[in-house]
Length: 149
Image (tube, rainbow, N blue to C red; front, top):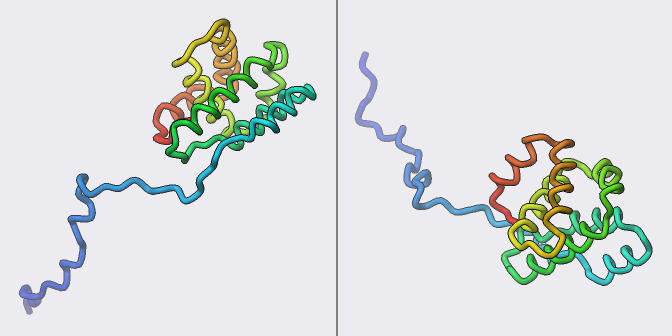
């Protein structure tokens, strides 16, 4: 016997929901305001450069829409990166997880966008060390990620 072809029960999928024009990015509910500058300054004054780097990367305002907060976090992170000597870079990188290394790579690339006196060479050293640890994966994740540092 033939099945009932007049039934429209199979048409339950809303195809308009998959239209590219209706795409909405997922909004992040967690809004970070960035790292505390006073706390980072205290860490740097005490010589805890690696701890300051971890703190800055863990509190990066990746989901924040406020450009001023992002710029303040960038300046603070660059200050921390430039205080760490090239002989201490390997020790600092070995203490970071992959997620934090990706955030560090985002800040390195943002630092390349706004070069200052002596920062480009130091950032190139950071890039070389992070790339040696993470390979092309970190670069790919940073360039494909929609949340900018």
